Image 1 (cartoon, one colour):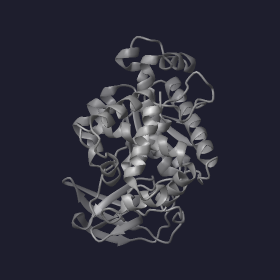
Image 2: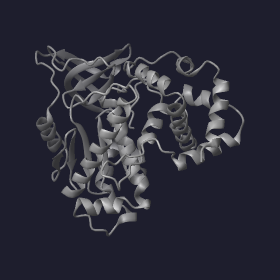
Image 3: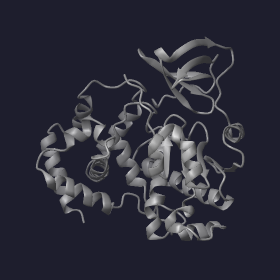
Image 4: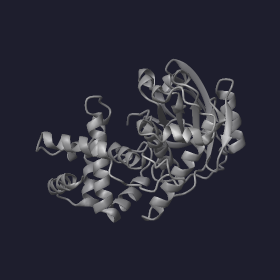
Amino acid sequence: MKFRLLVCFSIILLPQLASGMDVITWMQKDQRKTAEGRITATHETGLILQTTDGMMWPITNDEIISRERNDQGFLLLNEAQLSQRLLVELPAGFKIHKTAHYVICYNTSRAYAQWSGALYERLYRGFVNYWSQRGIEIHDPAQPMVAVVFDNQASFAKYSERELGAATSSVIGYYSMQTNRVAMYDLTGTSAQSGVRRSTVSQINQVLSRPEAEWTVATIVHEATHQLAFNCGMQQRYADIPLWISEGLAIYFETPDLGSSKGWRSIGKVNRTRLARAKQVLSRSNQAVLPGLLSSDDSFRKAASALDSYALAWSLNYYLLKRYPREYANYLKQLSEREALKDPPKGERIVEFNHYFGEDLNQFERNFRKYLASLR
């Protein structure tokens, strides 16, 4: 089992309060770290330590220097405690904006923090309502979800470089599976919207409702959808969740209706950009594309094939939700029970897919191609 740092549970949750916490000291990238928390998953090569702020630390056996146990009970930080922890951790100048389900830590304008919080809450409502109507059990997060909002790209890059490296210059936001946070920067400061006043929520909404801003807002919603899936019981962090389904679902939700107070009146509408690219991919060759997409995440991690894979992922999720809604819901339930660090045997992903959607994958792909060709 390889530990993967994914920047994007078993449904039976561990109890919030347990007797004693593990205290582990380890070396990570030439840095000595010590943290206390609960072990949420183990593997012959290592473990995952969850700390009270909701972070999860994948630690290999070779990295561990010492491991002890104290008599303190494990309890996730509440809203006030989590807010204080964030203010201590981040540079001076950050403030806190709280909503029903989120703690927004920001050093940009309060209006922008309020706009972000309202956007996230609208997504939360849309996400919960959508899946509840389809038989997917959604639970409230065990802890407030965290979003860190920076005033500009430079401060965002300084924060995210430790996780993203050089890639930080090419993203406007991301979800970190390790920290369980979404990080982003003030989108009204991007070049397309520069020079526009953003002193009120209504002004910000006006700026970011423009067509040229749609992709930037969609990116933030995409990352927040990942956060929701990992905090509301649909997926478990560090479990083997195929990227075709996790990324496809995030794209399915990513474009809000910013002109509406409800925000997501048209969940599941056709994504024209992804559809066009998927059609291009399928037109290049008659060779089957689904076996590779289903069995491996590699194509998502390579620059040359990532955009094609994201387009196919959206297309496949769209097709399944429209043609196989019951089977799709059952498949999501099965994935929600997958345990962290317990990767299935090679080839098992396709076996599972066939179990829910039919055993003849070649015929399935032919039907899939015909369906996409009919979409406009």
